[in-house]
Length: 216
Ligand code: ADP
Ligand code: ZN
Image (tube, rainbow, N blue to C red; front, side, top):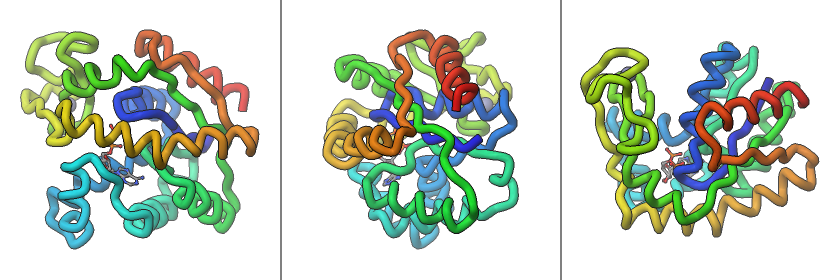
């Protein structure tokens, strides 16, 4: 199963990718995570991406496409993957089509997670995650069972992303509407687009995505 999760920042792509990859034994490919790792490691790519990410803009296509191309050719992707945060531009979508075609693979579906704009800002401003395993939480919507302790791995290092603040969020939303939202039409035209209700509780959204997978 090869799936793309599409949706604005704060739609819950990362949360859902986490749930479904664990259940289905798929690989989660998050370009946001890969770029944050590059920034942390201080690589050339990380240095180029850091300021752009802090401001909420998009990292240049050639950089992200290169990262994804390398990652997709790894053997663990053979059993299926969930792309979360890629593609984000029409250029990236075309590059993905080519990459998959060259490997004799294809996308099974693109799940668009639909969320009202008004709640996105609140979701992102309240969000934090585990520094050790990446599990994500929220001040009000999704607290860990024990405060300050990661549900998944027990770590107590819970951190906030630098770009998860009200100001940067608006730039990220703008980038989404300008660059990424055309992908909805792109995948609709290819008959790959399936919409799920991202306003529903986390487990309900997961069930809807499971249903998409089951029917693709
Ligand atoms: P979110 O979906 O919550 O906005 P991500 O973790 O997916 O967050 O991405 C964080 C940042 O990383 C983006 O704002 C952007 O700067 C950069 N980024 C991630 N994926 C891509 C991509 N496919 N193309 C360009 N920039 C990207
Ligand atoms: Zn954890």
